[in-house]
Structure formats: C-alpha cells, structure tokens
Picture: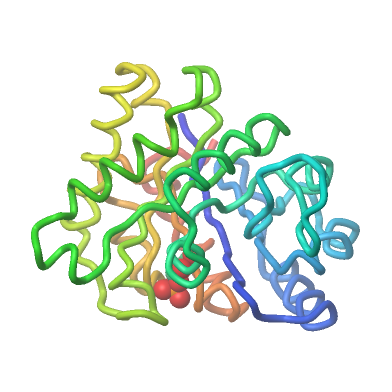
Length: 262
Ligand code: 13P
C-alpha cells in the first residue's frame, strides 16, 4: 500500500524564525501517521535550521529548486549535490520556475537527472496553462512535460520520481480556479498512461502522482479520493498551521475509513 504524500510548498515565504514558528505549531498539531508522509519545502536558507528542529518521525524536507550541475562556476546557485544529506525531495519544474525563470524542458530533464544522481527524489511538477486547456492542448503539454523530463532515466530511477499535476490555472496565485476532481482524475490517468508507455505497467502502477492547485482543508479529500492520486502539493494553505494540520487530518481520516491506517 502506498503512503499518502502531503507536500507543503512555502514558496518565497517565511524567514528562519517564521518558519521555525510554523513548524513548532504544526508539530503540536500533528500525530505520527505511518501511512502519511509529510514533506515541508521551505526556502533554501531555512532548510538547514529546520533539519535540526523537525521531528523526523513526522516530517521530511524538500528543496524548491537546485542547479543541475554538481559544482562549478555558477555564482549564486546551490546544487543537488550540496542538498543530498539535507533533503529527501526536491521540487523540479514548478510552473513558477517554468514561467518566471524560463526553465525549459531540457533544463528540467537535467535537473530531474541531477536529483536522482544525488539520491534525492524529484517531485516533477507538470500542468497546462488556462490558454493551453482552452485550446485543447492539455494532453500534448502533459505528454511533452512528462516524456522529456523522464527521458534520461532508467526504470529503476523512475520509481524514485514523484509527479505532481498542477494545472497552472488552478494555482491560487495564478488563476485560482478550483479544478474539478474529474479534471484531476483525467490528467492523473493520462500521466500514468505516459509513464506506462515509457516504462511499462509496473512503473506506472508504482509511481506516485500528486494533485496541486488551491488545495485546502475543505477540498483535499475530494482530490485524495481520485483514483490514482497519491497525495497533494499544497501552496497557500500550507502556510496556515490550522489549515495544513486540517489537510493532514483529512488524509488520515480517509485512510482510516478505507482501512489503510496500518
Ligand atoms: P496553491 O495551493 O496556493 O494554489 O499553490 C499550489 C502550488 O503551486 C504548490 O506547489
């Protein structure tokens, strides 16, 4: 049985003391759930201090970005190699990076490979814009984003990848529209189908696929109930300890009701 994976993407919010305060509040409100994996993704600067504060039975850490080379003359950058003992996961290809930092399909492919090379599980973010959906290009966009990002990997590597479907139009700071669970279901099934085409049915079954985009404590259950959805990538609501603890509680309750709370 797969874990439920809940990832808090704090984006460019919270300095060290604010992040520490939020973790303190979350730690008070969160029980240890064996079936639920909770991952916090703070700013780069905050990863190190949080690594000594978090209760590792409850939380893991993710970087929001890193450079694809292990080292070199790249002023201002931090590599996956430098993060390898600090984080379990790294977000790769978030739409904000694709849009604001012009990250290309090739760059994202190289970052996925760099994460794997350094024993970090990439959380590959994919998703179409409002215009692409309107033009009927959703499948093409997902196809291109998934196939190019995974193209340098072996089947064994792919088992470490997590894919997050985040339609850009549903991210609270872009469109903020709420995606229907059926829309998430259709995209997630298509993503799995792509993985199956590339790596076969076992890889497709095993890979974890998350949903992200305006998820909060009142909607998370609808997405977690979607067939093939293994968790959620949460932005805005993860900055609020009550809401994020509510999301964790909802996930727990759902597993319990399904008899999966081992
Ligand atoms: P929101 O949950 O604020 O829509 O953000 C989603 C997101 O981009 C998480 O990576």
